[in-house]
Length: 95
Image 1 (tube, rainbow, N blue to C red):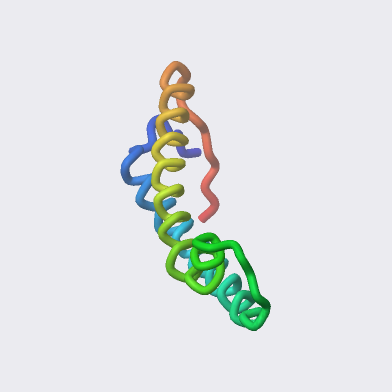
Image 2: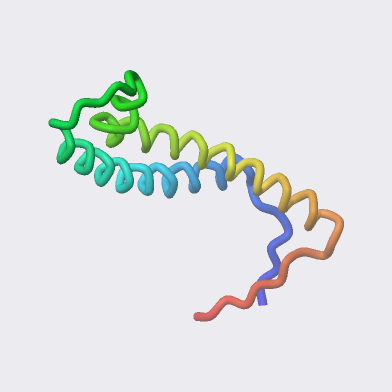
């Protein structure tokens, strides 16, 4: 039985940045493919069609990565606040 008493907020933010950025890259790839398939359809959405269309493979990983960092820091801080008043979180690790 392992007891988790605290999570380092900046490190957890970095971990979620990598995970969310990778997720954004995958979603951005498929969004860009879908946008390129419908490229002949005229649209009048301006900047949004660029950000969420052809350039999604670049914009979504950045957006998801930044979001993941802040979500990770907030989640770790909330965990530390809630668990700080308790004895810790018991986790069973299988080896």
